[in-house]
View 1: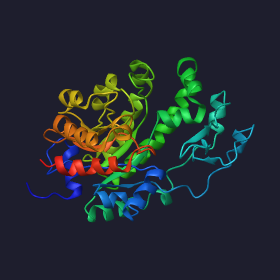
View 2: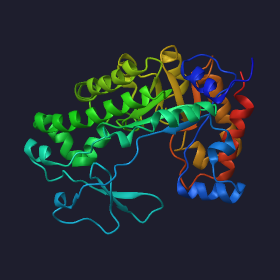
View 3: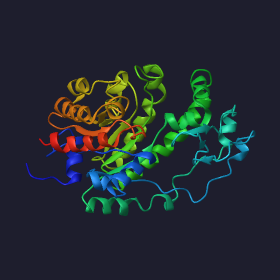
Length: 354
């Protein structure tokens, strides 16, 4: 088999065809980035380890509104706001943060209508996407377009308990929030797909360790039709675009639904929650797998040899014929030994050739 470009390798694999070898990627926390710089003298892990994907995304707004009227009791020192007004403040433990919620005290749809919602439509936020995508394609990379979340964005406005209560007892309140966020995600998906992205990255953490955090029927009522709208917007703009869905945990109860509405890739496929080999057997003809190397077990607590063995097993059992991109299932946390990170990528290079 001839040597493929990184772009060809990723797209071929995610279309469930066989590339020349298994592609790979990872994300680093600040602590792991420091370990990387110290060990290698380099600053770019993607270039150093040969990751095959690069990303494009919307520009930040020129200015955020004043969210303080939505926090009558104030916010902790050091709080920074997202464009939805969710505040994050230092939690005193590595990169982790605490949160405050702008709509925690909102009680009516009128309150929601008065909220300063973000606007993704100004040209200054997305006019660069075509040029950015072309530059990355010209350099040979597969291009991911960041789209974001629906469920996570919604509960981070209100607090999770409040939103779940509204989903049961105050339909109009919950629907307003979900619909408003869905409109943003659909516009973003349309634009990154239109710009030429190979993959749109989106999803929601709706899985716990052994089940969904809501009933499958509730997920189908509230989230399935809204994600269907987002994926349709992307694929209407660019039918070749692949749709990537991220959720931690065990989401087996809704995998068929995700495939039905147009998702092509599942991530992160935590092996502590779902067996990648079983998913390959049951769904490998309909969806690709991205991830599969556990960050709850193998990466932080295994030896380098155990990491290599895990990569080899995953490729042999979840990568037959393509349909696999190897990655740690989460951003690499501070407790992961440097030698395990090296072992991961060396093993992909060693065992990932078809």
